[in-house]
Amino acid sequence: MRGLLVGRMQPVHQGHLQVVKRILEEVDEVIIGIGSAQLSHTLKDPFTAGERVMMFTKALSENGIPASRYYIIPIQDIECNSVWVAHAKMLTPPFERVYTGNSLVQRLFIEEGCQVTAPPLYYRDTYSGTEVRRRMLNNQDWESLLPPSVAEVIKEIDGVERIQHLAKKEVSELNTDQSS
Ligand code: NAD
Image 1 (cartoon, rainbow, N blue to C red):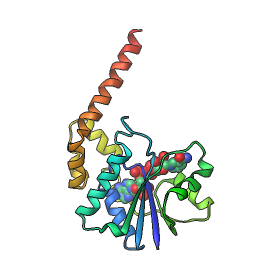
Image 2 (cartoon, rainbow, N blue to C red):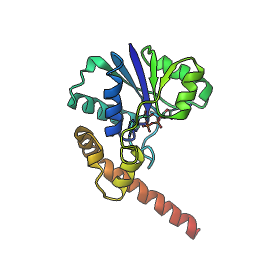
Image 3 (cartoon, rainbow, N blue to C red):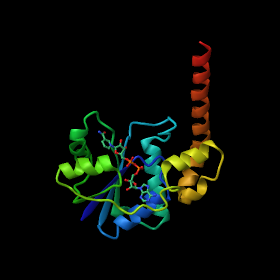
Image 4 (cartoon, rainbow, N blue to C red):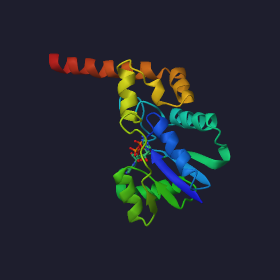
């Protein structure tokens, strides 16, 4: 049996890893859909789909999860929510179960007759992409929220510098707007 987990994974954190481990107790294979695959280089979505694939691949390998048990598939957003499930199904191997805590994602799969489970959240206040990116921006401890191999990927791609640089650009644009 196969299960699908979809998320933006901006970036992959300990919560994502824990939920994948939990899903693999219930299914033989997990499909990890990297959502909003077309987005990168913004404060909300700083990392490319390829970078997020690399983060998840290394985190799963680091935790001894064999490659035969997962597929990591980038999924671009589309304008029409009503056909997004069909779009996701076109890109992924077949699956019997969907795992998500996102109410929109739950609703869209339920309306297509899929079996949807909301997995438990692990320390959602800290294990969240928003909190990781906030800490990166403010030079606070972000590494402890991530699998060590993901922290290494972020260092390799200068991810913190990217986020801080993007933030400066947006502030300077604001200043330009105010002076004009
Ligand atoms: P996310 O990375 O915030 O979360 C993904 C999943 O990881 C969650 O549903 C949850 O199950 C799990 N998770 C997160 N933190 C956790 C924690 N601390 N403990 C345990 N589990 C945790 O991503 P998201 O915002 O849910 O991503 C949904 C994606 O689907 C987005 O990319 C969105 O654009 C896409 N989408 C697209 C369309 C469209 O294109 N029309 C429609 C619906 C959804």
